Amino acid sequence: MTLEKFLLAAVTIAAAAAIAASVPQPVSQIGTIDFFGYGALDAARLERVLPFKPGDPLPTTELRDEAEQTISRVADRPSVTVSSICCQADGRFSVFVGMAEASAPFIDFNERPAGDHKFPAGVLDVFKKMDQFWQAAVQAGHATEDDSQGYALLDDPDTHFEQIKLRDWARANFQVVFKILDSSRYQEQRAYAAEALGYLKRSPRQVYALVQASFDANGGVRNNALRALAIVVKAGPELISEVPAERFIPLLHSPEWSDRNKTALLFETLTESRERAVLGALHSEALEPLREMAQWKDWRHAQSSARLLGRITGMEEAQIDKLIAFHDVEDILKAIHSVPVRK
Image (cartoon, rainbow, N blue to C red; front, side, top):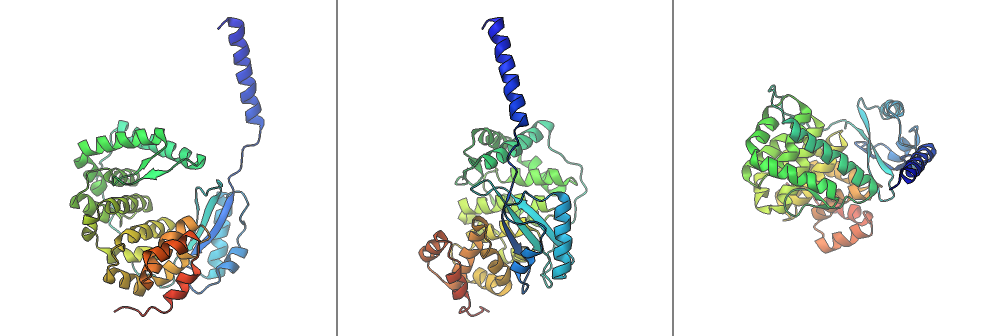
């Protein structure tokens, strides 16, 4: 390339960048607003008092604070959280408003560990790149995930590459992963360890550690542990017996969205065999939160709860599949009324 052409190209690129910078970028918008933990309250009325609505830009921190205070006052609940989840098919966000249930069961979270264990800097760089590439893939709409091997692999090549690097390192250094998850006082380190644990070879020890981490004092650690556990036992159903299913039911009543969402995913696998004791426990101890979640307008995140309710009613799996395909939760909700509580 001649110097003249090089300078012309440089000017053209600089001009294009300046033009791009001057063009308003798409604003992240609210797609749906859903509630949980509201019990007998009117969710539609609660939505009307929010300071934002579907189609609005994502709420700022100040607007979220205002929303939480407003719902807390109107619903007479001491604790309310507003979460934004990316992304729906059209790129918009799902907003979830959660509140502490008036008579929620006690969740026995772990004590915070006091150790000083950390991942090496090079491994932390892998985690950070995974997060960065994964978020970009989700926002771009090409984050199809393959969980068939018992751990998450995205079809996005950049994320996939980092996930393989993490898998290989974690399997070669599994004792470090277990140690950090069990003993580190740093919640970010434990969250990374829970994620890494999902990439180990499947074993009862792996499942036990993920079960324990599912009750970590930090929500991010619980999210990663629950997600990894659901994927592990889905690929290795012989390990389902290692999971104390009824211990997880209180998490379906949690005021944190990720607890409810990931626990419903886990129960979707734990109930594939239609184990009567587990379905009976869900019916008697978690019917209300499952009903709430099954009616979410964000259908992607409602499906697990709808399927669980269908299984509680005794519906055939093919019938549940058909209803879910048509977003028809009403028939499932009607059927649940006729199911006697199992003792």
